[in-house]
Image 1: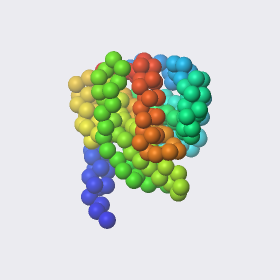
Image 2: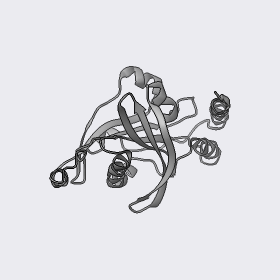
Image 3: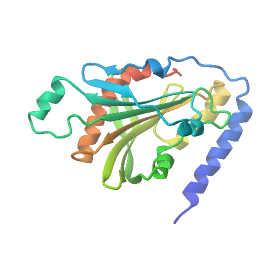
Image 4: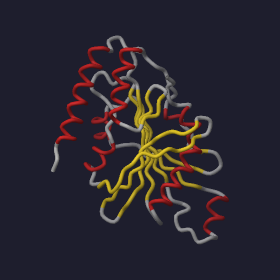
Length: 226
């Protein structure tokens, strides 16, 4: 097993923390709306509820703000598709956003590539994809297929930091150092959508993209700008 990628990642995280900690004294405080006020209804297609996270997990993550929601499609959209025999029209979408007001004290988001395997999920495939977004053009995010036992999920995730949407963890760390120097800011978020695979991974991916495009304008209103 090649351990160099893991060693390189750990070295980068440690060096990033050291540089940011030394550069970001008296960091600017950025205000944002609380995720507690994030709507449970998205348009006319999605209804959700808050799931929360266990206290032990929150102790580890040290988040400033977060939401862990599940949204399901409702109304005529689901009814019309059920008539066509589609079994996954009511497939839930799990939305997690973890926000840090500052990452200079060592509290920072954890890559799904590290967290999910620790929870028993195996990465089957992973790549970056470009998705057209309303009012923004295309954004580049990560698309992964993960498996645990007989369960499979399509994961869509990215880092949303100081107005940027970033797929690469290494690029996110580079911007973190730059913004700590140039803007005296290290706030940032990890955004993750999880879609259970009921029919095929491609069907789950497309289902997730529909939700992403619907939730995008709302989500951006809860993210600090750059």
